[in-house]
Amino acid sequence: MGANVAPPWAARSHGADARHPRPDDSDGASQAACGARAEWWPALRSSEIEEAKAAARRQADEPVVPDGYRLVPEDEKLEMRTSLRAKFAELEDRYARLPLTIETEGQRKQQQFLRTKIVETERALALFSRSGDVLVEA
Image (cartoon, rainbow, N blue to C red; front, side, top):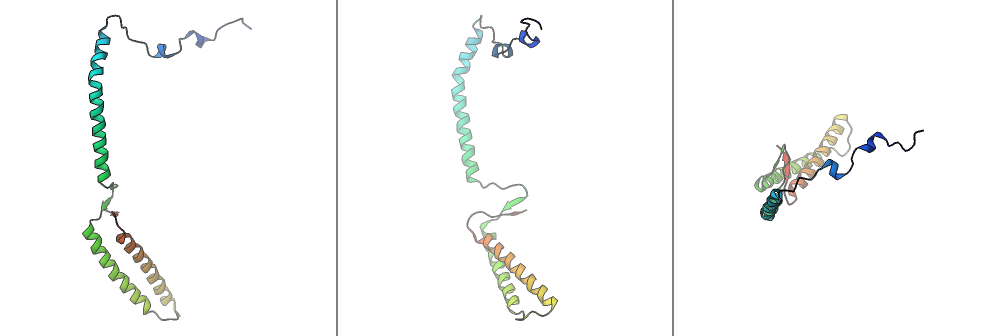
């Protein structure tokens, strides 16, 4: 084996100076440019911060509505609750008129259909009855 032979990659310079060489500061022009930049940087930074805070406040005030959905206005929610209550009462009435003993396949299907529709109507009524925003597919 060879004595003290450096691997080929050891000859390259590693470190920050090799990847990011420093500019030549011998003329002082770059120092003047840095000084000028340091004067306007805090003002720019504070205005960016204020703009970001204002944008965050606007977003907090506006509800986020995903694509393909829309926000239901309060008057439409009230109208929907009224129609759902009427539908729920009609479904309960139809269910109550079913015979006490279900004997035929058609009666069983009708009973199952009414039970499913009653559950769906209860869920929709609960959705439109809660306070806050309601999103529906557009």
